[in-house]
Image 1 (cartoon, rainbow, N blue to C red):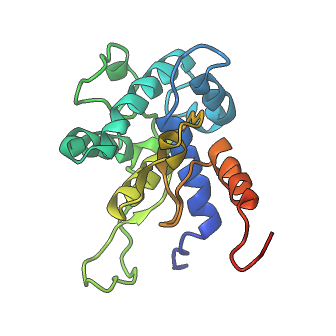
Image 2: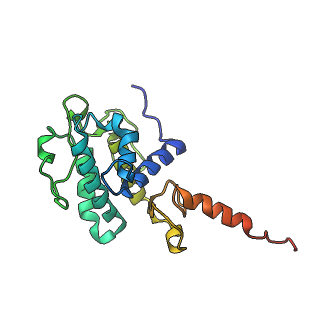
Image 3: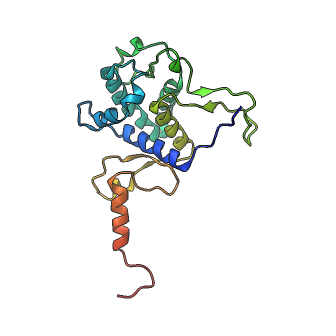
Amino acid sequence: MTPRRRESRKETRRRCEMATALVNARGTKQGDKLGRFMDKHWDSLQERFEGDRTVATQFLADLAFVLRDAWDKGKWDPAEQNLERIFAAHPGISELRDLKLGESRIGPISKPRRFERPAFKVRLGHKIPRNNQPTPIFEPRDVLDEIAYAVLRAGSLGLLKICEGKSKGWSCTTPYVVADEGRRRFCYETCGDQAKAEAKKKPKKGRKG
């Protein structure tokens, strides 16, 4: 059996950027943040939602709202429940058609074949990590699995952050940051570039004039 490769830094950043984009997405109209997210990732998402973009858009709008609870330790229970439901296998689309915001049963929908299994697989013979606890292997079915995994990883490592651009009064549109590394202080959009520009303006130590 071919061993599962470790996640690369590039892959981690890609997933964290996608997660940050979704968590901060608002609005369900074309051209809104969520609409642009759907345009970019619909090819990956349409099997999960059986081609129903209307259901998918409303579901992701509700999910973005609920996942923001992950930034508040007092609300981790509902955030954890929803991450579990994203990773799970589910029977079909009908259970989401009457979904109401805030219901604890919010979760993914699925189609036979790819989504009849959860996002984590059991692999006999897989190397056990240092804690001597066997660990299922993450095998994402679509970008929503990857986003949920990025939030789970960041939450476990203390990397769910608020962009410092917000506290500086900058026009930050993605204040909830799923950070890819501990040193990240700003979001992946304009604040990161603005911070670099501000840093260049400061005189370097040891220089005169």
